[in-house]
Structures are given as structure tokens and as C-alpha cells.
Length: 330
Ligand code: F6P
Image 1 (tube, rainbow, N blue to C red):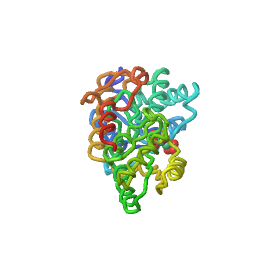
Image 2: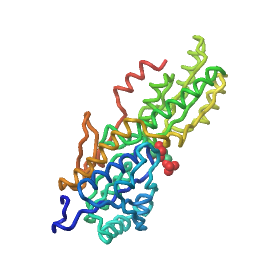
Image 3: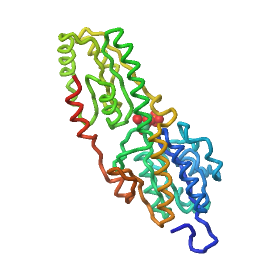
């Protein structure tokens, strides 16, 4: 379906929502969807609070001015939510019927893999969907980039530098836990960027804590006074680990869980520009008559693929970065 749905005077209406954990750059994506669509003569309905708002018909008509002054803002002006109702079969069917009732021909969904699955289920009930990867975790397998990852990384890197300063003054060991759900991308990137001694990520950690203790003891013997351990949320237990390491090494050890700070703040230039490109591409795909696609960044290019195929993909951490980290963590 292109701009017109059959009869020439009937203009296509798209709904746009943000879903799951918010991510800096989501606003830039929403802005790009709205402005590209309006530029092409389409109508846009903003759907508040993700799929929850869709099921409650919480819509706002959006035009060019609705998205003014938001590209620099963190969070999402559309609000977001996690929606358990979408997990059972009745949810997506109801969502599709609500779209039809409100004249929404296509949905642009900005979120992580849970949001992608929701979008796919809705598409099975006859509503065209386009999914955009929006998560700080980088754990959407179909794309090498996700909206918000770059900002979250820079926020976490800055926070870790600060912990490093105080750890250095006190000659302590610090375990710093970063977000990422089950994925270790943030931990790996920060581990390299912050010059950590240890990087613990769910994809590679063997849970041999004694080996970490032994390495700390060896470094201590060599005169090293500062030890930074970056721990991924998916490994967890940072507080317990700190207590055990302190007991075993005699080195004062503290845990810092950075938490939601990583999800907020003004998006970086990369997140603003990439989110804008992805939002625009989502609308271009609809204009070109495409259905049920996932927008991706792969091998240095913005592109798209079948949504079901995107969901079936698996992602590992960047193995070359991991290999580099093995040489640099000392
Ligand atoms: O997906 C982003 C993320 O921040 C994860 O890193 C984290 O595990 C999760 O969301 C936390 O979600 P909630 O906001 O529901 O606590």
C-alpha cells in the first residue's frame, strides 16, 4: 500500500508508538516519522504508552509542530510501557481491531525485541507494521545499531570514570554494574573504554570467581592499587561479589550499580542522526508499499528486512572487541 489506500482521496494514516524501556533518541525517531509522513501527505496518530495506550485507544493527532523542540530530549514524549496483555493471543488481535476502527493503516513501533514480537503478532491480524530498534541494550539481533546505545554508553563511561577517581584515591577495588538485561554489549564497550581490569558479561563469564580473586591478588603483589571490574546486569550480584572479593583479598571493595541514569539524558549526535534516518526510512518503506519490515543498520548501511526473519535472528557480542579486551585487561 502506498500513500493512497485504493481510492485516491483516502490518505494513509500511520500510528507511531514507543514501547519497552525508553532510550535516548526515541524522540528523534518519532520526530522523523511524523515529519517524513506529513511531508508525504500522510496522517499520523501518536499512540501514548506503547501497546497499553494502543489497547486503551490513547491517541493524539500529530503534525509537524507536535514534534518541535524534542530532538535533543531524552526519554520519549509518547511515554512508554511494558504491556503484559500483548503476551496473550487476545491482545494483538484487539490491537489490530482498534487500529482498523480508528483508521490506522500501519503502525511504526519503536522498541526492543519484546516490542518486535508484539508488532509481528499484530501484523498476523492484518495491520502493516514497521519496527525500529530502540533500546540501550543493543540486543536487537537484526541491527548492528540500536537507538540509545551510544548515549547510554557515553553516560556509563562518564559515571565509571567518576567511580574510578574515588577508587584511585582510596586504593579500592570497584565493581561497577551496567545495564544490558541478558546482553553484555554495554559492559564490553565500557570495559574497553574505561580501561577495566575485568569485564564480566553473560555471553562469556564462566563464573570462576576464584580466578578473578587470584588475578587481583597477583596485580596487588605487582603494586597495582586500583582494580575496576565492569559487571553486566546479566551477571548481576555485584554487592555479593564485592563482599566475597574483599573477604578473600583483604582489599576494600565497593559495588556501584549505575542503573537508570544510563537510560536518560540528551541523546548523542549519533543517536539523534541514526534515529532520524531510521524514522524516515520507516515511512519511506510504507510509501514504497512494503509490509512488516524491521529497519536495521547492517554493514554500515541503513536497510530493512522481513520482521519475522529479524525476530528469528540471534546475536552474540562483537567477538573481535572481546578478543581485543582480552589483550588490554590487565
Ligand atoms: O532494556 C533496557 C533496560 O534498561 C535493561 O537494560 C534493563 O534490564 C531493563 O530495561 C529494566 O527495565 P525496567 O524499566 O522495566 O526496570
